[in-house]
Image (cartoon, rainbow, N blue to C red; front, side):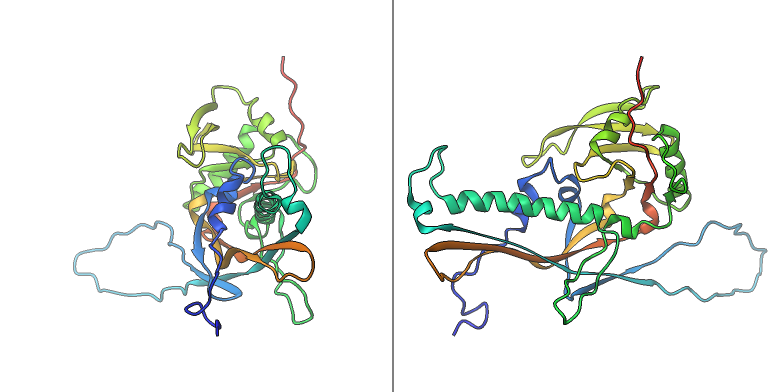
Length: 301
């Protein structure tokens, strides 16, 4: 009886790493953030803050004193189940195919893995609410980047405005004053074009992520508060950009993505990929959002 992992035969490999690396240029944020483990459907973590600097000087022979320390803040996010399934007929699997494809099901699974990677990236960037789900078949949904960034949000009361270097510097100053130092600027393709128009030598290029898994040339922006890697993401809207500290963001897996073969109920090969995970967003004050952007590339002479 294969009721546990010790007796079971045919357990599938963890394909979460495959999903992470299958579309590195199209899922830059999902690829750059770390990985951790969730143990419940509501994944929790603790936040702590430091007191700001004060004048600290006492006379000789002063009396010791103590003060109550504030409690840590408890935060959490719900895990979200993601799944994709495909099937091909038994005939399609065995007939000769062009393009060097020997197995239709294997080819389609590669596409499915890439589509799942897109779903993961899109969820991180666009999901602005959380949903705890219910017994009435309501799905759980985690809060993404727009849900978590609430302190350093530079809005313009809904009025569209151009993206400028000064806006980025203003946001960085706010975060800096709270002890943060973002290193990544996440932008849409359109806003990447806007950033490329910045003058005074602010924009430079460097080889980034020089590993066997991902090699690409990225632009960097030199600001008054350090250097930002400018990362283009096809899922970013044109009306907002994010300044992020990726070391404080993780994908927490309750069930890593796994590939499974579904029972045969007709003359078809059936496969499924399923995983359950959430976004762990620490140090919320270490990130910023600039909203109400017009997405217009300035004309150049």
